[in-house]
Amino acid sequence: MFAFDIQHRLAAILGQPHPSTPSSAVVLVCLPAHCAVDTEALYVELAERVTAGLDASAAVLCPGHLYAQTHFAAGERLLINAGPGPGPLRGCAGGPLGLLDFTDSAAVIAAVAADEYHTWASTVAGTPDAIPLHEVFQAFAHDATEAVSAFCSQPRVSAMLAADQRGETSFVVEEYATLLAAYQAGPAEHCRYLIDVMQLGDALLDLDGTLVTPAPLHRPRLTQTLAQRRQYHQEARRRLRSANPTTVLVACHTIVTPHRSYP
Image (cartoon, rainbow, N blue to C red):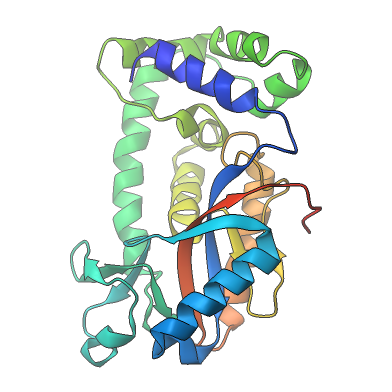
């Protein structure tokens, strides 16, 4: 991706007026156990809960976002949109918590994280830490274009953009935002962050209707702080670990209009 493309996308996204502009997010939704064996009930429950809990205008399943162990052969029929996965894992959009895997999949993600961190560290070697995107945007909230220009002029960000321009790397937009803060916190923090994001998405809608998310749930992974993401990841994991293993967990892409106050 060329440097201009990154800057253009950041300016376009950050320039959207809050709070009326919809944005997409990956949301994990907890559903009653019977949804594992009743497809019609699953889609009805999912639509009702996403509409009520998120005011979302759309929700599309995310095949391959979650993983299950292949040795649960008898539980294969309970997985949602099951397909191939890395190594011994099966990719899926969801299923009963007791069948889902958050351990071996973390090891797979950690291997990816190590490679990505090495590429990033080599690219920015010798440059000082960059001021996080959300801080720059707050300082220039009146002008998204000026904010992006100020952010991209920092030596560390410039080095990333230049490497993209030369075709040596292909950093995605998120790597210039909250993920950049995780990179700067060191390889261990970056690894933890990537595992959490890949497994937990941007929000968890619990079985009791509670929405757990970093605040605000708008332009996720671009303007949220690393501390906000950590808090969400910790609470989401706590809730999933204490949930009944028969609870069905589904990953979906949603389009949300953030005019509500989320907890």
